[in-house]
Amino acid sequence: MASEVGIKVLNPTIDPDTEKSLMAIRPESLDGVTIGLLANGKRNSVELLQHVYEVLKENSNIKLGIEENKGNASRPCPDDILSNVIKSCDVIITASGD
View 1 (cartoon, rainbow, N blue to C red):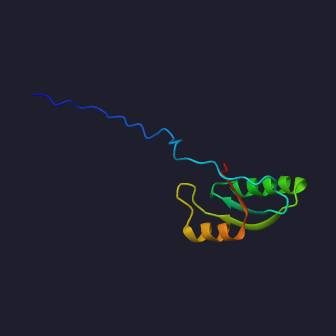
View 2: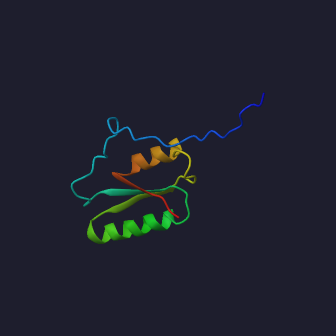
View 3: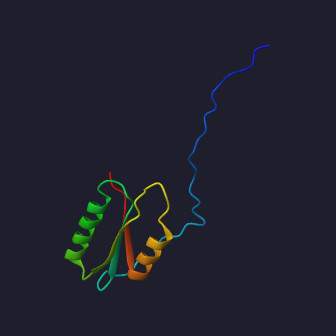
């Protein structure tokens, strides 16, 4: 008796859980806000964030609180980096490069 040989294909995607997801609270204005930049570690993510900051700075009275790079796009942000950014900034901007 021959056994069946085959390939089982798995779908690694999931639908978002919109009931438990919340939008971040956004300030009405960026004037006087301290901005944090959190890069994800991909190539060009730091440069992208710096450019976004410069554009925002042209149009708002913001200051740069901290720039961090979590160093690995596939892993969550380390707690120490996240805590430091949260303590130092009113608004955090993240980016993915490539």
